[in-house]
Amino acid sequence: MRSPITGTAAGVPFTALPPAGDGPAPAGDRPAPLIVTWHMMDAPRSNAAFAAALPMNDLPAWRVHLGMPMCGARMVDGSTDAIVELFQKDPLMSFLFPFVRQAAEEFPAALESIRAQLPVADGPIGVLGGSLGGAVALRILAGTEIPVFAGAVVNGAIRMRSVVDLFPGDYHYDAASKKVVDGLDFVTKAGDIAGRAPLLVVSGELDHPALRTDAFDLVDALGERSELLSIPGLAHPLADEPGIEPAPQLPPAREVDAGLTTWFRRHLADAA
Image (cartoon, rainbow, N blue to C red):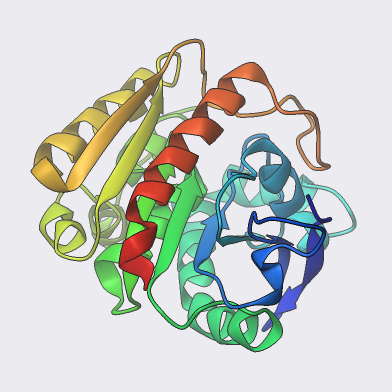
């Protein structure tokens, strides 16, 4: 297995894992399909840490793990204090929505840069997101025309209202914030998602109950274009704290990793 490749793509930090293959210089030296991921804001909360938690090492495809805003190499003063200040100010309008919007908006240029730097195929891509990164992956599916052969979310932020409810206190919606939170309800966008690509919805059995309900609702709304993978013993995070640096893969994450590998391998033929 070759070492991860680190870099930036149109200003977005990434950790890239070359495709599996035979010999000392496997398929990473010739064009291979591309799977792009966005990490959680819980552990693992950086592109490098997410790559270690869910490497999908047996896939004959590039896995390029992108950094979310203000995370990893983009942390302010090397800490998450600035993020804490944002969600204490307004969890939806200062933190959740701006982060999803920025990650989605910067992705087309980042994808173009990835294609210029790495020998990835020109066909449709796979997308994967964990927790808040799941909302980014779903937004790419529901709101863009970027060709996608398959998608997956892990303990995903499927209905942003459910995520807001996890923060302390009662959130008081006004017209602007209600419009934003309704626009980040991907159950209501299931028709758009189903028309784009098949989706694997991974849900930890110990995840927040509301997020788990949202996972079931999305699978029901998508119908034949989706599958649910329920992981025993998995709470919301995929790694131990602090979750910024790469760490050994935990047993529940290993099970998620195996399920994702099987899912994307099944659909790789559609990337041609």
